[in-house]
Amino acid sequence: MLDSGDKASYVASQAKRLKRSLTLLPLFGLIYFTVCGGSFGYEQLISSSGPGLALLMLIATPIIFSIPNILMVRELQSMMPVEGGYYHWVKQAFGPLPGFLAGWMNWIVSWVDTSIYPLLFASYLSFFIPQLSNGWQIGSTFLSGPLLSWLVAILVILLMSWLQVRGSRLAGLTSSWIGVLILLPLAAMSVLGIYNWIAGGTTASLPFFSEGQDWTGAFSVGLFIVMWNFMGWELPTVAGDEIIKPKKTYSKAMVLVLVATILTYALPTVAGLYGGAGADQKYLLWTEDVSSVEVSAPAAESIPADQLPEGAITTIVAEPELSEPGSETTSAEPEVGAMEAYAAQYGITIDQLNEWGVDPQATNGWMFPDIARVIGEQIAGRDSPLALFLGYSVTVAAMLAMLGLFIGNSLGGSRIPFALAEDGMMPKWMVKVHPRYGTPWVAIVVVGVIYAIFSLQAFSFLVVLDVLLNTLVILMCFAALWKLRFSRPNLPRTKIPGGYFGLVVFTLMPTAIIGLAIYSQVVEEGILGAVGYAIAAILIGALIFFFMRKFIKPGVPDVDPYRASDE
Image (cartoon, rainbow, N blue to C red; front, side):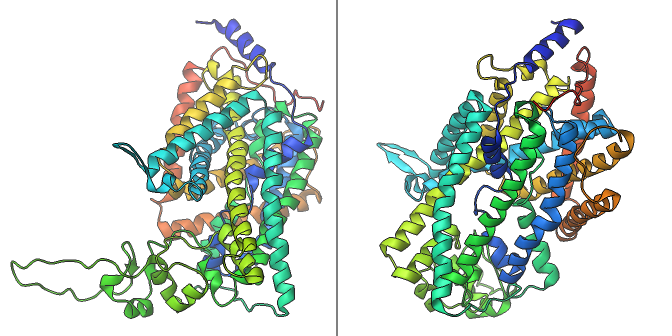
């Protein structure tokens, strides 16, 4: 056991080993893959909310949500550009418990969110290696698809964790080059889609709302999706002591990432909608799983109940047929495919699906690899080399995007426990820094193990919990911004422009969006849904805080977050 003096000196000596190596390019890559990570994951926004509203939200969200977040992060990070970032901002404003909870909540977000990406990588890889979905028979041993996918995910976690240990600069440069590789096929898809639009001479007539949706329903459905794809600006600040000239470099990187993010989302979406994959209700195919569809009354009437796909939900409750006592009852095998049942809700016939090259038995809708293929088919015909090339290349881009997303998000996931340990709120062994690479290698290994455990089951259903916890931290950061304006008014900082009027405006815009998102979730799911999970996570964090404060903290002085220079 180390006494108090030895404990403090050990923690301080380890923290000094952190290596400043992140310049603009690698930091750009890390922030880009924390906030955006390519055009993948928001396709369902188009079908659930409607093309017009989706495009409006993609334009409005950066203005009313991302820019205020960027300005908030810029001001607080210019005051405290240290390892731990937002943890120290909230702690300096409101004390140790709120600061710890801010770090704790975003750490949980990292567990749930980051562990999904290796599994999604394996899912995209199964397009080229079907055994990852169907399983693999080796002699008398059968390895199931989920097991093989998990093994691929573990390999990804191991390799990316090794990359993180080798240095934050190497990880950042790798993510930047991955970004270039995924943007090339997306750019080709966008150019060809816009070419289709112009060459066609007409603009497809697309509705503002999705069919059957009103303003309230369409907005509430799409809000969480679009927020999720424009948040995370504060997360990489936890690597503050690893950034060269952090005050200037981080601000420049955020501006570049904002421009890249808007283009990454907007151009492929516009190209897809107007370049061949949006007209004639095709936009309704922009979705993920259609195997559990809620079939509306007209659609259900047109499809025999015993032919609906397994898992389909119908709004019609039929009179049960009573069988003779002792007679056997049999249920017919489903004859109507999941996609056919889904499409029938909107009056899309099986002939239309066949004309569009859509398998009526499919359980998934169109994602961007499919949309890219459709664009190619509009130019060169079905199964043409161009269509196949676009489909395959965007699929590879999606695979690479999952690697970049893991790298970007795992940076924050490993640095926050290090920062807590440096401040005495995690075991001291978590603060150990690699003597050669200058990275918190123990924290990286620990979170790698956590990711491996969570990847046993894709917790994608908890994505709403992720959004709630992350947005609560954002609100805490805005509150800290206000508090520190009054409690530490003389500290040098890069202020939000516009004086207090600007501060009010740029605080109210994201706060209103976050409040509306939380309210709509409570109305839709009730207090025991994701909100209940969030409350439980906060209570657990509070219990851990008091344990750490009593048994781990003694002997470790508080970190001075104002000490860092801009070197």
